[in-house]
Length: 226
Image 1 (cartoon, rainbow, N blue to C red):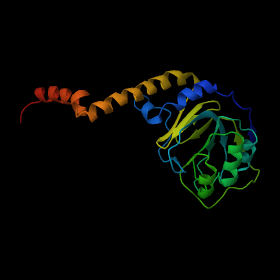
Image 2 (cartoon, helix red, strand yellow):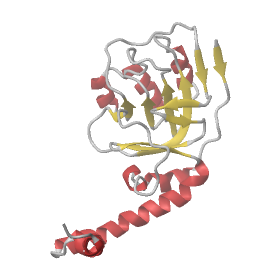
Image 3 (tube, one colour):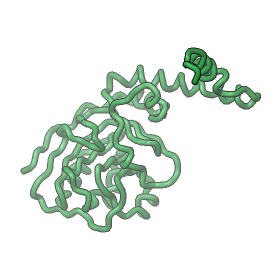
Image 4 (cartoon, rainbow, N blue to C red):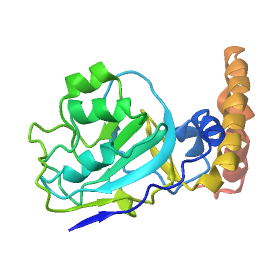
C-alpha cells in the first residue's frame, strides 16, 4: 500500500537562516525534547550545519521505491527524513539518491537506518545522517511506502513541515513557531561564551566565576562533619 500526501508549506528562509546560526548543542543546554538518538550520525567528514523543512518518508525493508518518488518532490531548502520502520539491514540512500537530492535543492538527508556509497556521499557533499553503513541496498519493489506522513526517526516524532537542525553533534526537530525564540536564545548564549573564553584566557577559573565553587562551599558548610 502507498500513501502519497501533499508537500508541507516550506518554512520561511529567514527563519531557517536564524536557526542555522544556532548550534544544536547550544539549544541542548535549555531544551530536552526533539533531539534524535545520538546513534544517527553524520556520514561525511568535516563540520557542517543544516536547517530546513522536513519532508518525511516511511519505507519498509528492502523496498525504497517511495524514496525515489520523494526525489521528484523535493524543493530547495528541504530535509529528507526517512523512517525505516525498524529495518537496519538495507541502505535507503546511496550515491545516486544523494546526488539527485542535492540537485533538487535538498540540504540534507536523515535516515533511521544505514546508508551506503560513503565515498560518493563525500564526493557529492550532501550531508547524510544515518545509523551506519551497509552494502545491502534497497530496491524499487513497489510494494509499500508513505510520503509526507507523520513518522518516527531516531526516537523523535517528525511531521511534514517541521524544522530540522543538524550538525556533527546531532539532529534536532522542532515546530516552525518555536524557531525564533530558540534561535535567539542559542545565539545569545554563543555570544556570551566568547566572554567566558576571554576570562579564561586571562587566567580566571571557570568554577570561580560561574558560581560552582560558591555553591559547593555553601553545601559543604551545611554538611554534617563525620
